[in-house]
Amino acid sequence: MSIPLNNSLKRLIFPFICLATICCTKSEETKSTTVDTTAIVVPVKPSEKGKEPNCYDYLTELVRSSNFPFRNIDKAKANLLIDKDENGLIFAKIYFDTEGTGTLGWVNYNVKSRTLENASAYLESPEKLTFDGTFAESLETCLGINYNPKPQVTASLQDAYNQSSVISLPNSYDYDFLLELKGFVKLSTEIASTLKIKGLENIKIAKLPIEEVYQPILLAGKVISGQSQLFLLVLDKEFNEVSRLKLYDSKEINGASQSTTYSISSDYQIELKQSNVKDNQGNVGQSDIKISIYRLSKDGQIIEVK
View (cartoon, rainbow, N blue to C red):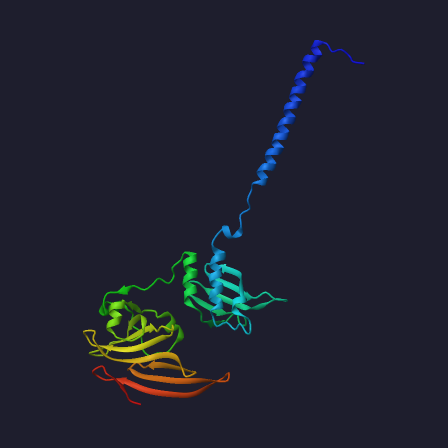
């Protein structure tokens, strides 16, 4: 049984129904909008936030190229886990994927000084390691820094001499000295070619204390194999070469490792020590040591005295 509505009641109900319909419609629109917005959000990948992960890849290659004791582990499978990086002072764990911890050790790397240390055993006195310097350059380029700018190439031998530092005496073979060559100035290819040192590239020089009428210098470079060589050159006042002597070299000859090291006293007495190390079926031992003594004459000649 229907109850007739008078006109006043109809006018009251109709706006209420419209208002309810509008509210429901708005609510559905709001729900639809919220769902669509959530669906199109793309999460940012960690590698897109910065370049550090890629830069650490160069550090990993640097460590793999080093003389860190990897034991019988394939270096290519070794990885780094960065523990901390404080303004280029990096402490990292070397590990590989295996059952158990897989930890091989710990290393420190100083980006600014380009030094790598094995901190596995003694944190207070870590062991300095050697490595391929090209990875250090790649790391610095990736990080956008230049702690070790390329040396300026000079126009003449005299310019290089004037710009170089004086290496004090006594002086003797030191790995870090040959690696860093602090105070040395690079020669241009044209000037280096006039010195006629066959097979030597990337030549740099530094002054030694002047002796009367001649000017001794240290000359460093690398051969094609990447090995360093160091020479003593004696120049006259017009920068013409008077004499030369190879101070440092390392090479393989007939299965033996041959190296020459040196020491120069304050009065220019030079001692060369040549050693041969043979590998006899995995047993490495010292087989021969030869010592030669030289001195500089008053006219700049290098004379063997023993």
